[in-house]
Length: 181
Image 1 (tube, helix red, strand yellow):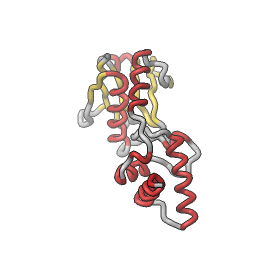
Image 2 (cartoon, one colour):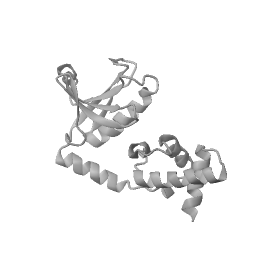
Image 3 (cartoon, one colour):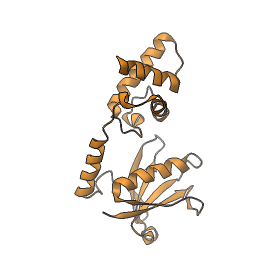
C-alpha cells in the first residue's frame, strides 16, 4: 500500500503554519485530505486545496493529485499535469485501491435512523435541504444521498405544513420521530 504525504495549499501558498499529514492508501488519503480541506477552506475559500504526493519533489514537476472543493460544495480529486488541472474521478485508482474503497463504503453502510440526536444535527449542518442536486446531500456519515434527500423532502413538507422554523434541532427531532414509527 502506498504512503502519501498530504500538503495544505492555503490561499495559493504553502505555509508552515498549516499542518501536513501522512496517509497509507488512497482511502485514508482521501479521508485525511477532506479533514484538512474542511479545516482550512473556511478562512480562505479560494485557491485552497490539499496536495497528495508520494514524494514532495513531485510538487515541483507539476504532476500530482489535489483534493479540492468547488463553488458548489462538491469535492473531488484533480490531477495536475504540466501545470494544468485534469478531472480524474476514480480513474486514477488501481483495481486494488478501488476494491478497498468499495469494501470500506459497504462496511460503513449507515442509515439515518442509526444516528443519535447530535449526529443528526451535524448531518443537517452538512446538507442543503431543498436542493435538487444530489451532491448537496453528500455527508460525512456516508449515508446514501437518495435516503438523505427523501427524508429532507418530507422534513421540508412537514415544517412548511406546520409552520415550524428550519433548525438543526427540529431536523433531528423530526428524523428521530420518523425513525420511531
